[in-house]
Image 1 (tube, rainbow, N blue to C red):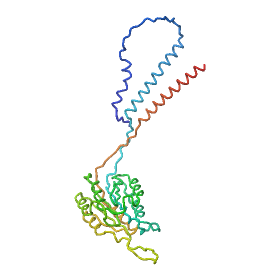
Image 2 (image 1 turned 180 degrees about the vertical axis):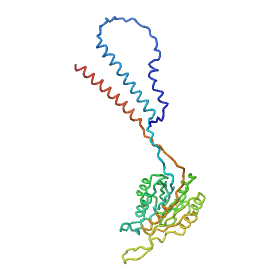
Image 3 (image 1 turned 90 degrees about the vertical axis):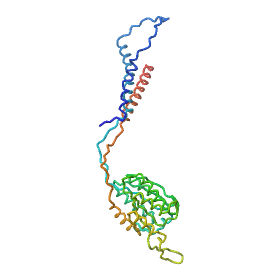
Image 4 (image 1 turned 180 degrees about the horizontal axis):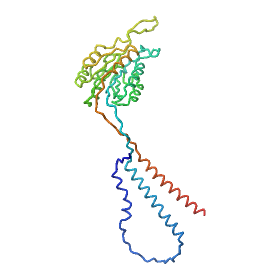
Length: 331
């Protein structure tokens, strides 16, 4: 059905008639100094003159009608659509510190760094979260809100794919990332408030320590699922041959476990892309938030139709007048 956003503007339609019917000011008739003799005009010429006089009035009336219709904002009100009600609200905090460039991960048979693997596997996880509200935090020296809570999963995935190492520094501010999530969740009264924290190191920067951030998360009933990223063994080549090293020696699993357990969550260890995928499958089993059923009716703006038609009428009339004037001059 057609719906007008500002229907009261339709009251302006008779305004030209009111102006036309206003009493005219009385003026004295003055006797012309020069008397022009009366010229007999035949009926055909008189009819053409009357027609030319009425045409602009009709055009102006139609333009006024179309302009008022456009100003009243006509809209097409579509059928009601149910909005998904069973959804989870999850903030995803991704570590962009310098250690995320270590190439100890394997993806499709090729060695890649930790961030490249995370983008692919986490991107698939985001794609599966149909109906969920997701947000994205990037942290290193500081924590930044890259994407606020939204149902637009494609935007969240795009922002993740566009993230680069060194974008927010080289260190790791785990406490600041948790505190920022707490701040963003604070306005949500009825929410499961889940924070997915992905890091490969320990807290080395930031204004808030993980312990302080943990107190805030517990006070706000935020559940933290922490994921430690990094392989246990990596073959490192040098001039003296190859040697086995532990690329995850700086991973603070004790703190990550404490953050998860004291908030009712769980700590996971991702040593490769297969392990990361299994972790996300477990996270898919989180209970959704029960909300009241909501509906929306899509609105499609129609104001440009009467507006375009009015402009075409004016343009067509002006073209016709110019052509007629040129024709009379040539004849």
